[in-house]
Image (cartoon, rainbow, N blue to C red; front, side, top):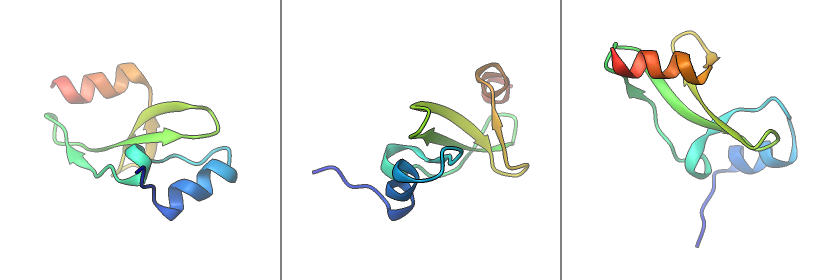
Amino acid sequence: MITTTVEFDMAVWGNKNAWVPACGGTETPFISRSGVKLLYCFNPFLGRHAYLNVDQDIVLTDPEAQAYKQI
């Protein structure tokens, strides 16, 4: 059985700019090696995953996310 959160389901049908926590909305933030709090997100409209910098509320490009995780 696949379980998703209400926010995740709403993003699938609504806002094309919505980034919601990945894994059906169950992903939780973590602290990267560089000390930045990141959240793995999914945009159902775009069908893409990305990392969100929780402290600055910005979606990171793949190279930016890798830089944060490897420091």
